[in-house]
Each structure stands twice: as structure tokens, then as C-alpha cells.
Amino acid sequence: MVTVVIPWRPQPSRVPVFETVVAWWRANLPEAEIVPVDTDDVPFALARCRNVGLAARPDDEVVVVADADTLPQVGPLREAVAAARTSGRVHLPYTAYHWLGEAGSAQFADGVALEDCDHELVRGACSGVYVTTPATWRSHGGQDERFRGWGFEDAAWYLAHTTLLGEPPVRHDGLVFALHHQAEVREGPQYDANAALMQQYRDAAAAGPAAMRDLLGVPAP
Image: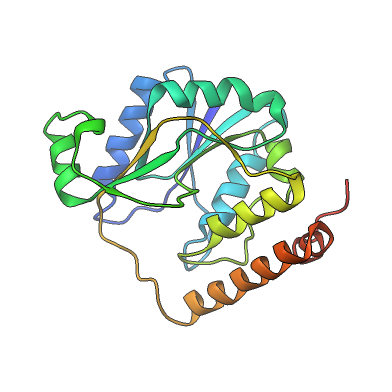
């Protein structure tokens, strides 16, 4: 059993991309149940959507948590699904993140293979598609629901995983592809609050596991 959890709140520029992404999952992981997840948070709370989607599944079930604009390669995805049930770590089915932008997304819509589309390489990416079990996700605190709107929840989660589980998420050699849509605003009081919380994560990671557990309220194993 595999579930694909997709945090999703309809917005005009995102609807065609979401429909494309859902069609891709149905074609390439046909055995999976696809579950869009939203909460009542304003602004949209991506971290909480991910947590809620995983909490609704059995502890030992493999869950793919996929952004509504991002597609992986099938081979690395299936490798990650096979490994995630017993590894005790979150798996990222990629080593390189391609943002296709408007030009690359238009090429994909015209039938060009994702791997051949124009793109920008996003260095240090740790978001887009996660493969895990609910038990593994919970073991290091999941994603922090204090992050609201857009920005920093993925980088903070990566530090928490690395600090509390003793190693970074497991990567599988491959690519993911982010499709174009209207960009979200990454400024203002909420963004500033997210940035300040991210600095607390950096400080906790530097101090060690006990400080990270205190920041997240995660009990010692």
C-alpha cells in the first residue's frame, strides 16, 4: 500500500499544474491512493498539511508527500518507496532539483520529456517529494506547524532530521522537476517570523540533539 499525499489549496494559476501532477501520479504509480490535503489555516500552512496527511495513515505505511507542482523520476521514486518502510529515515528520490520555469513547463506540455526541458538547477533543495512512513516522520517531530505561508519549513525539517536521527535524509540518484505557476509572495511579517524561527533551528542544530528536542518538544528516544 502506498499513498500519495498532496498538500493542495486551489488557486487559479495552480489548477492546471495540479491536474497535470495528479494525472502523472495516476499513470506512473497506479497502485497508489492519491489524497489531496488542506487545513483551515490562513495563510496556507504547508507544514501542517504534510503532518495531517501523514497522521491519517497507518504508522508502517509508505507515504509519498508530494508538492502539487513537482514530479520525480519513476526509477528513483520506486527505489525510495521500497527502502522507506524499514530504514527509519525519510527518503528524497532525487539528487538534483530542476525548476522548469515557464519555458520548460511549456515544453513539457508540448510533449518534451521532463529530462530534456529547459530548467534552472536549484542547489541545496530538500523539498518537493518526500518518501517516508508516519512513524519515521513523527520520530523527529515532522514539520514545524509554526511555519505559515511560504518559506523555511523544508530547510528547518532537514536540520531536525539530521540532528535527531543522526544523518540527513537518504537521497536516491535522480531528478525532480518543478512546474511553473505564479510565484508566492515571500516577504512581510509572516515571512520574517518564519526566518526568525529558522534561525532557532540553526542554533539548535549547532548545539546538538538535546537543544533540537527542546525546540520541537520531541522526547528523547
